[in-house]
Length: 93
Image 1 (spheres, rainbow, N blue to C red):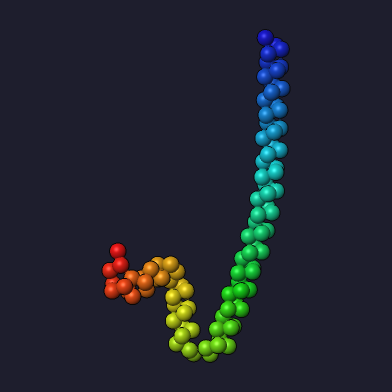
Image 2 (cartoon, rainbow, N blue to C red):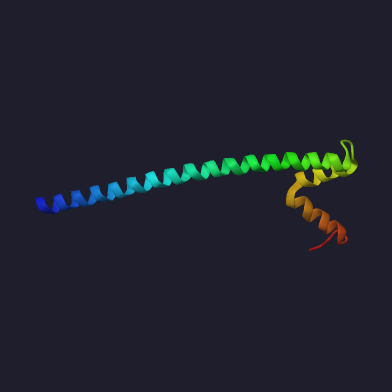
């Protein structure tokens, strides 16, 4: 009986070690992904600022076109769907 308990104990310890190693690897991978997300967010913000600058250069600060574009960009895909259905006579579906 003692040998079976010793084997079970060893098996469980090995399983625990494997799980701890996996957790460490996943934590490191998570850290790397978080860094990548932060870099992407920074790049997105840089590109948004560049787009805003280029729009001001093209349309000017008080342009109606720029304000309309900003409003439609803020509404997202829902706004795009509404604009599309508006062009099709109001009831697209």
